[in-house]
Amino acid sequence: MSPDPAYIAEIAQAWAQSDASGSANERGAILEELVKSLFGGLPGFSHWKSRHLTDDGSAEFDVCFHNDIRLSPFPFAEPAIVVECKNTGHRIDAAGVRNFIAKLEDVQVSWAFLVAAQGITGSGGRNTRAHAAIQSARGRKVNLLVVTRAEIEALQSAEHFAALVRDKIMAHSLNAPFF
Image (cartoon, rainbow, N blue to C red; front, side, top):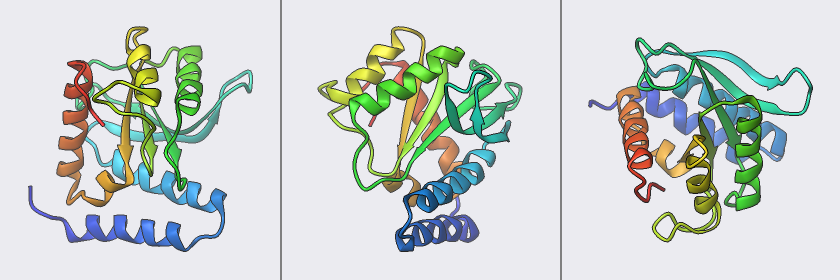
């Protein structure tokens, strides 16, 4: 996988803009735009809608993608893939993770991503806190994969991101510590 200077620059620019922002809403919007670009670059993924409200207005999903299973690294997942964006200065706790999982269960989405700049609480190796909430949801057929700022900053190309996603799917599916 060869480094893609434009890809690397786009990521660096987004984080620089985010770091310079004094507004939590603006930081969130910057991360949502970066997510649209990164995930939209995966084979078979196309952006459908941002900030989608459910019909009853009870839940909002940050960024939603159509998953064309003929081309996607998710041929086993349904056509809707949801990404929750958390561009905060702290790790997302178990309550925040459980809240997102509950939204997924309400609309029967079985695969989603949480892009959490600082990650989540607990330890994947010991299956504690937010990690435990993700493992528990797995038993209910809700699969949540976490991507952090450090992982995004380390990306060198769209192919590298696809490999990261593949590795997260495999580790999650085999119930390995994956964060």
